[in-house]
Length: 296
Length: 297
Image (cartoon, rainbow over all chains, first blue to last red; front, side, top):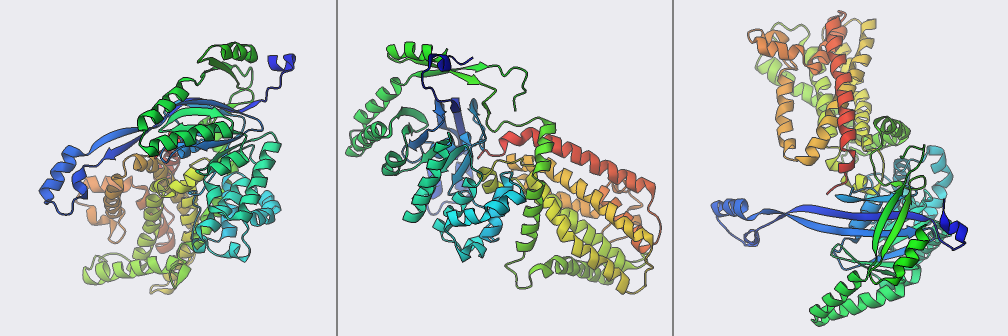
């Protein structure tokens, strides 16, 4: 059934197949008049009726790629380019407007925004988060100490979470999500908040996932993090898929692009962007039927 | 077969890569499961639901000096204020035997439905961070909220019964007092179902949360919380609405069995059970159908 096995070529099994996904956000375009200090009520009402229009923003535009076992993929792009949206789509938290994501197991997303219940203690939040991911009380008991150690919290773990610093909260969330031993791990900016010790721990964690033939996605604005930790990088910009390659190659082109844009030579930057996009291979998926087994 | 196409494709400039998706190994992410699978998944998260409910009951009043005492104090003060206004000043107690008990049962029972339905309806809008952090059957959220209200309601019900024992005309304690338990359980199911029906609507049209308060207030008047149920005798429409109002039936069942020592009418149980089971079935189904849309911004 698998030709690659017969021919002996080393082809890793895909863990995530992203097939032509698009996500559109609907939002309101507020009239500029709203920011002015004083306007009469009548004026405000009228301008609201006439000026505020519903706009659609394409957060992701026809993204397709395949991630394989053992890949750790860094995702780079400017602010608002759709990196976090892509993570949420991969995790199944947002269903794309068109397209499909296929995965070999349920991807787990760790983001800094994933708030738990702030009024209860870190220890209770560990239990709650693990239960939400479907672990049993016995499994949590077995892993509890590991999670606390991973989070780097000591006696603070029994304090309510709203007394935590943002770094402590991020570390706790990371530790909770990493506790399920996910095959596919999505890390959204979480590495930026931790200290050096925590960065070390999370690097080890990522290495463990990829060593177990899993896949890791990392969103980070630090190109150093990505070239240092990943073996592959993806660049997206304003919802478009620009480039896919080794971290060094992609980082080079990305730096070049940013430099051109900052220098004021935006046209040249856009040219680079268009050329890179044009050279991307087009991806088509063919569904192999799953026989008698029901899809779940 | 994929490798041949890939090598061929590499030669042309903007090649096409064909990716076989083997559905034995890969499955769609975030896809809503079958209805029965969904119920099984929900059952598998029962410890999450219980833990979430318990944790929030404990922490709900942490900011207040009196803490959990407010679980009892709030309905108590409610009952007292209604007693003063309607019992003493306006005199709606005319013709009602043991008015304090009548009033306490009405307000305590009704407040459980108010809190559960409002909370259940807002369970999606107020838990967006949980929804975006973890993948779990979302029906766990309204379910956890209703379980939490049920747990919080236990001390309230005990206070209610103590209040009735210790206030003026001493009531005899009979086996009928046990009927309070199934009545409250059916009420729980009804609240849950209505909450699950409202939650997806409220997520789409947040404005409705303003209207909900008025609907609840109307519901309170057709539940005869603080006046005699015969008061609407002149208006047959109101009378029929009360007859088919499940919350009124809960209140009536509890009043009959605790205060008036009469076995509640079979019809009251029928109306209540039909509403409870019907709304839970409809609520679960509607909630499940929208499952994929709850993570959207």
